[in-house]
Structure formats: structure tokens, C-alpha cells
Amino acid sequence: MYDADQAAIDAGVSSESLMDSAGAAIARHVGDRYEKRKVVVLCGPGNNGGDGFVAGRYLVEAGWDVSVALLGKKSALKGDAAKAAKTWKGKIAPLSPDAIEDAELVVDAIFGAGLSRDIEGEVRATLEAVIGRGLPVVAVDVPSGVNGDTGHVQGIAVVADLTVTFFRRKTGHTLMPGRHYSGETVVADIGIPDSALTENGARVEENHPDLWLARYPWPQLDGHKYDRGYAVVVASNPDMTGAARLAARGALRIGAGLVGIVGPAEATAINAVNVTSVMTASYANKQGFIDFISDSRRNAILLGPGNGISDSTRENVLAALALGKACVLDADALSVFRDDPETLFEALSDNCLLTPHSGEFMRLFGNPSDNSGSKLAQTREAAERCGATVLFKGADTVIAAPDGRAVINTNAPPELATAGAGDVLAGFAIGLMAQGLDSFTAASASAWLHGETARAFGPGLISEDLNETLPGVLKELKARL
Image (cartoon, rainbow, N blue to C red):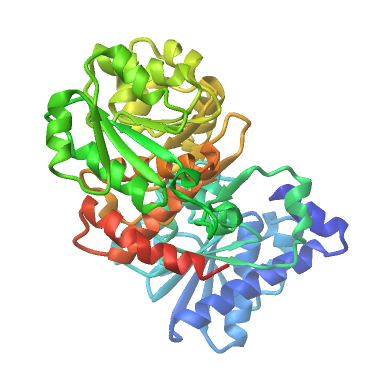
């Protein structure tokens, strides 16, 4: 953002104009969402506080009752913040719990995205008072106390009802818990040219169909089922066959031309009486498994869901990877390498996708060398280390490729925290990879469709509902073309 601001200035937009536009945008969004009431603007000593002074001025001009509380002295302000403070004609109170005594709405303009230290003293006491009174809060850029890079809370933060940020979202708006603390987040155009984004080399994007829709593998009129790929789901453990069936149906629903479940005879007997469109097959030993998946038509393999942590799971994973086919590794296919992750990493390629949750991620990758604690940094480091795409699951799913590209998925509703949802996600991914999408694009599309399908179904969701709701979401997605 420092680079983006400078790019705007280099393009002829003054820094004062940027701040004025930011303050005007804050005031506009406040006016759009709330009836007029007593507003207290909490201003910090930097440019975030300057934005707050401008927002307060615009609100007063629109007929609002506004007061300002400042951290520090007005005489200590510098640059554009000092100029903005001079345009404020009302009184300035010291920032303290007393300043919000008669507030009905708080504009939090204390600290912006660059905060890297814990909040203490009067600021902490004031935020505690805001929380204690349950006041609605509009945050400027990010809620004070939320780290704009990692999303972590630096000591304390208030959950904002609305956050107004500028030019682009920050990673702290999308990573947990920052996503939760930011509330509804809107991005205001304050005059920074789009060219600033490409000039500073940003390689993180919020997951959205615009990133991959043009490459989505819709069925073609002159195609046939083998053109759409043959995904194989491995089901090893007869006590946990449901996971494989969920994944297989997900792969079929998302468009794979053929989907088969392969496993030991006991597991196959259970699967065979529980599926119709999905084919089933069994193998007697390691060589039988290799012979089955070696068929050139079977071009994508999912291992892990319900496989069990065993020597046979480990052998199956390494055998599948040795064939060089597209692979998704989930659940037990990851945990089985917890004592020897390097063996797995050496066998992986960039045509592979790993889909760990937090426990599986730690078993494979341990503590990251990056000490910021950022999930984004952790996932990027993991992808580079293992040489494959990594989809680190959660409310803030992060997907990273070995070359440093990354997306953060933000549309997952809380209903996705249900048994089997991860198996369906893995099925979506292998289904898209069977149709020819690369691992990073398939992971991005799968994660978004997974979240959107859950959102479309709503409360009461169980994992089976995801596969049955997906066609409606795909129909809406295709209508965008």
C-alpha cells in the first residue's frame, strides 16, 4: 500500500487528495448504513487518524453530531494527518474511555494496517470500553489491533460492523481472525491507479471466479466421457468407506466423465451396494493396485479419505505418485508420512495437490521458519518446500503454488464445519484435475465452489448436501459467461 500510494502520487494525485477521498468514502458508507446519531471518531497519530479527521468533517457537513478523540497531541501530528486535523473545527478530546461516554456509533481510526505491536494503555482501555458498551463500530482500513498482514490480533481489537479499506483488501481482512474482526469489508476507490498493483509485484489474490472461470472445463458438444477424464478414488479401510463415496460423487458432480472407487475386496463390497453412477473395483495386493491405476485412461487419483494410517496407504500413495498422474492427497494420505515427510516431498510434483487441515499441516510441515505466524506465509513456504500445490483448509483457506502464487478463499460459511465436507472438497478437486485443470487452478475453483455451494444450501447443511446442491451453483456460474 505504501508503494500504491506512491504510484498514485507519481501519477499526479496528491497525498492530500488521497486522504480527502478516503475520509469522504468513510463518511459516505457511514451515511449509507446508519441513521443519524452521535458519532465519536477515535483518531490515532498517523495517517489513519488523518482519515478519521476528514471523515468527521464530512459527517458534520452532512448534519451528523460528531466529536473527535485523539491519541496524543494535535501539535505532534505530522504531514497530511496534521493538515487534516487543521480542517476539523470542533473540539478534540483526549482518547480515553470517557471520550465515548455519549457515543452511539464509533469510527475507529486509531491504527491502520501497519500495526505490529500489541495495543496497551489508554487505547486498550478505550477499546475495552467500546466492547463493554456494545457500540457499533466502523473501522478505517482495518480494525485497530488487527495486523494487516497476518490477521492476528495485537492484544485487543473490536469486532467492526463495517470496515472501509482502500484500493484493495489487505490479507489481514481475509485471514482469520482478522476476517471475523473486520465484519463487512468494503473497498473504496480513492484515486490509486490499477497499474500500481502490477508495478509492485503483488502475487496474492482473493479467490473469485474471475481468476479461473475462463479456464473452467465445461462439457463440449463434440466431447465424450473419456475427454472429461477418469478419476479414481482409493478406498482402503472397510470401516470408513463413506468418505470415498462422498469424494467420488463430488468428482462426478463437478464434471469428471468417469469416476471409480478402488479398494480391497471387503471395502469394494460395501461401496458396490451404495453407488450407482460410480464404478467399483477391487485389488488383492500392491501390484493389483498398481495395475489398476496404470491404465492410461485413469488420469487422476485421490488418496486419503477413509484410507487409514497404515503401510498399505503409504505404499499406495508412493505407487500413485510414481506414475506421474494428477494426484490429490488428503487426510490419511498425508498423516501416514508424519514421521518421514521428506519421502513424500521427494515423490511429489507440481501436478499434485495436498489438502491438509491444521493438524495434518503441522504433522507434515511442523513449525514454519517464518515467525510471523501468517497462514499465508506458512502455506507458501509449505508449497515451495514440497514442490506441490497446498490447500490449507479452514474458514480462511489458503492455496499456494510452489512458484509463490497464492489465493485466499473467503466465501466459506460456518456450516462447512461438518463431517465429510473435506472429502467432498477433495472430490471436487480431483474431478477438475481429471478434466485437465492444473492443481493450483483446480484447488482455487474447488474451494470457491465448495464455499458457494454451502452458502447456497444454508443452515442444516450436511456433507451429502454439497454434491446435490453443486449443479445449481454451476448453472449460475455458467450463466456468467
